[in-house]
Amino acid sequence: MRILVSTVMVTAALHSTAAGQTNAVQASRQLTPSEMGTAAVLSFEGRNGVAFSDLISHELLQRGVPLVERTRLAAVLRERDLTLDDLAAGRVDSSVLIEAARIDTLIFGSVTPITVYVSGADSGRVSVASLRLVDVRSGKILSSVSFNSNTEVLLKGKTYGTAATMMVAALIRNADRRMR
Image (cartoon, rainbow, N blue to C red):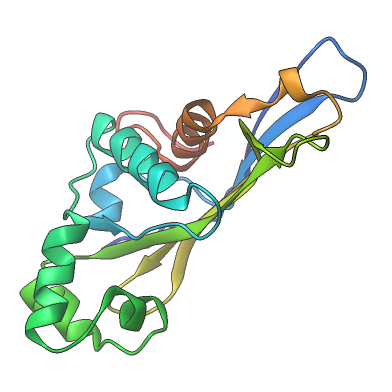
């Protein structure tokens, strides 16, 4: 069972030497990999969302969270004439995910890059990102994580990989550490 007695706000903030420049990550609640169960990471919304969700998947695997590949999930849904869009829209019965795909939790979210104002090009750095971890059985959000970067100083912004690492680190609690 993935229910924790208390809800903890976890904040990990990195402060640079520039005044007011902060990259902050906040998780509503930390979970151990076993509390998360087997997860599936859906493609994130936003520019470079698929690549960002792949980085989140990599970080989760590095921390011991078992994952079901998106292509496997898509195949299970396709067998039932459903799509990943149906899943994201809530039109998929949880029994399909639990029995056929063996998924306990879904992870989805969004990412917005810092845009270079002169050219409108993507800077390769993250402005805002968020993710939600949802229990498949109950439909309840188990945790949410947000990343916010002060975009006034472009070079102080975090790359996609660093933002993904920071977000997953805020979400995952090592099983041997006790919550305080």
